[in-house]
Image (cartoon, rainbow, N blue to C red; front, side):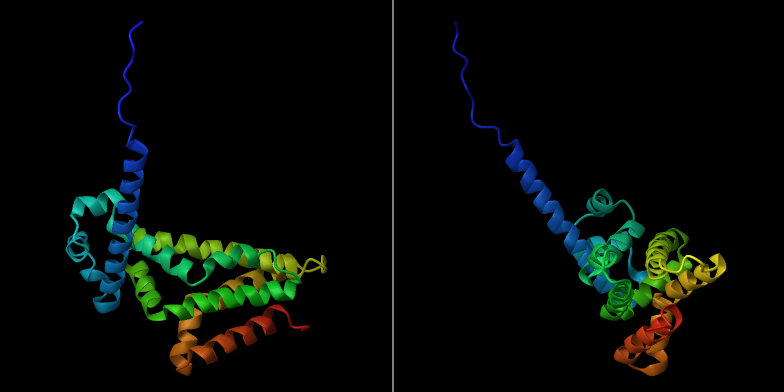
Amino acid sequence: MNKIESGPPCKRPYDLGKRQEASSRTREIVLEAARAQLEASGVRDVTMESLAKASGVTRQTIHNLFGTRTAVLEALFDRIASDAGMMRMREVMTATPPARMLDAFVEVFTGFWAKDRLLLKRIHGIAAIDPEFGQAVEARNQRRKMAATRVVERLYAALPGMEKEEKAGKIASLAALTSFEFFDALVESSGSIDIAVRCVYSVVNAVLWPAR
């Protein structure tokens, strides 16, 4: 019986891990470049060419990692949200008592809007003129509205007699009062993020939980 010689250990798993690590690093570099360009000059200067130049990679590399410029901006939006603590929403949705759930909901969104307000303002501006990116931002707004629905349902679970229209109004109010547009308008008019945050808490509690 012939002896089968064994070759050197397979390096594929190691090589794959190294490639994935390199891709992750490149992805972070591209996102940082996108953020810097948005902060410096706005969306018109954010192109696949400018991102490639700033990142030190090719356009094809960025295309392979993200697909499109819109996908780069979506990924940046997700990163900003994660850095601002949006991952806490799972915890918020199970908070007790319901009054704490409402406060935590407001806390997460005011914290999100406050952390990178000027950059988020640019992102929402992009959404207004770019239909594809606008759909991505609207999808995130819809998730916030779904969460607002859950909060209101918990708040009024002990009041089964509430009219359907009244509950719908409460949900719409909470969604509107925790929107970026409302928060940004408060900051612009008051000149203070802290005042805007306190105002959101005050108005939300007056509208949603008048008995507190």
